[in-house]
Length: 159
Figure 1: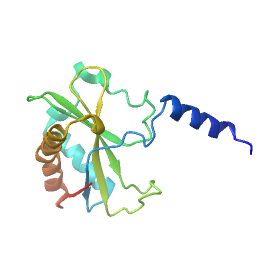
Figure 2: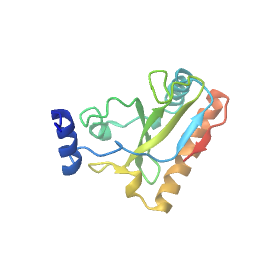
Figure 3: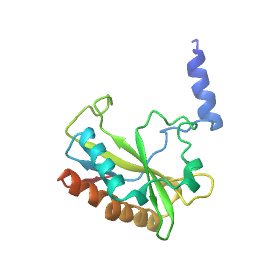
Figure 4: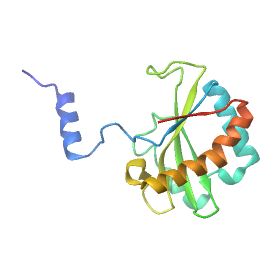
């Protein structure tokens, strides 16, 4: 049986760790019963009303997802100044361009990684249960709650 070059490359990369299986993984998903377009507009409103959630200049270098090869994910980054100072890299689920979930009446978002300003990002699999709960509670309280107000729908928490 002949193995194609692409298959061989994938096997080698997975075996050596140059790419990870399952991309980033992620924290629990918050699903909104609205279109992605409306959710994006709500996030734009959030940034306009609360500009403190935008990445500060001192942490712009951490927004390197394009260089890491994750530019296929449509995402946003939310910064939190109050202790603990941190950022959440959040990606969308459910897009008309997403063949897995082409439902334009539902859109989900999920934290994919967290940074405290030091080089590198922490993935969900590398956080303790209590830290994961703290991060998700903060995300719900400071971001999801406001997005629910703007979209006029309740988000559903899905694991």
